Length: 267
Image (cartoon, rainbow, N blue to C red; front, top):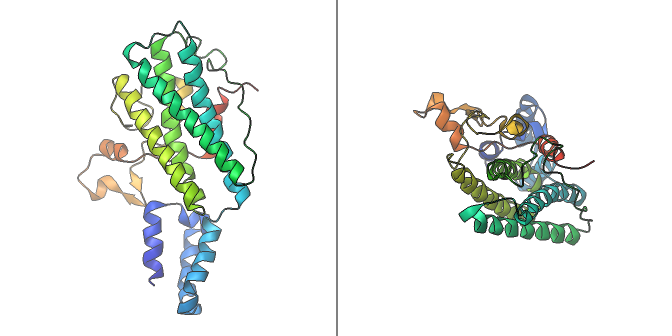
């Protein structure tokens, strides 16, 4: 078993692995002494202990993450449900697509509630939403362009939010698999909405060019990163920085996602 190769492989998919364990220097020092002190037969158990520190989650913490995801899914489902019920909103040929999106979001809500219950937890109740965000988007359910802007922001947030929690669900493969499946559905929604708005199906750089007003710009903060797994990709490739940003969706932290969602939640 090559411990360093395993760590390096994990680092490729989770650049924050050292932060989860300790500082990078402390972690590497620990790995060095680790290999000398632990008998080969005990390596898997010891490695499991180390990764439990990095990724291992109690059932309670997994329930917390699922309730966090449930808040987002409540937000998306209620957004589409209320918009489609608004007689002043003309979505034209796109209406059927958004009906399908609404149904997908409802399926996500029901799945997350079932998963939480199966883990012995209690699903949170749906908050009361104000999709005008206190008046920032007063025509969200009567102006198709405003509706599309919010739809894009919600779907792009969902993509980054699920990615942000993937490592924290690694201790439960079944939940992780389901969460990543929802992640891929959100990504498809986002790509189609972006196309409807005349944008690329993926994010280029940061908020610039995303055709979103200031309140929605936090959705795209950090998307302009060109360093992945410690590697400055443009420097080691012939790929332009702008194209590198298109190749990766950066995860959003739970705190940032909650800040975005709270814009639309009535206190």
